[in-house]
Figure (cartoon, rainbow, N blue to C red):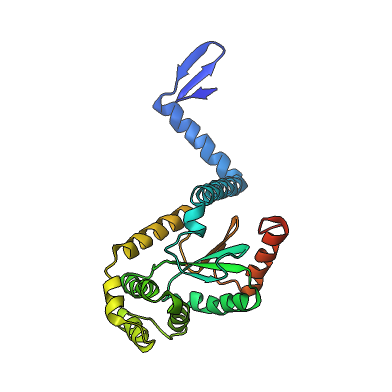
Length: 242
């Protein structure tokens, strides 16, 4: 039996010298070259271990940060605030796939009166996106009753949106621009970005859109049917997979 570079055998202890180590290394190398399928097995085992660890971390974050994920009062909420199923969406206004996912959300909200959508503003496309999301959250703080329409308008834009364009769309909606500009300096907005970024890190979210439904993370704009199935399963058995 080998322990920390020492061979232990029937009462005797033999330390490996450099020649021993080189010889053992050569034996191991030759064995692996002759049996390369072992490396595939090792790689598969490593991937499975990493997946188990990642899933365990996600479960821990979901349990410990449940209210912050699903019930943060600072996050915009669409649909039924008292809905029996909540979908949390991490999104960026400059994300093309998020724009594609808008139609999925609208369909679900139009056809299911008991779904709550929580929108996690997650600007990951650099300083430009951060500036745009500052305008959006300032809009929500200034005129929450108009925020849904503003959100949809922003999502329906072509190309990249910058701060100037976000402000122009806000002005065209008839909002009090002085009040909006004041809210843009609200430190709670940047704090919310930091909190969302920390949650995303804990959940392993690296792209948008990403959804949290019950006990599952759904990555990508996979279509309304995927989300609807998970909503139905949540109602049926309390999990996204029954």
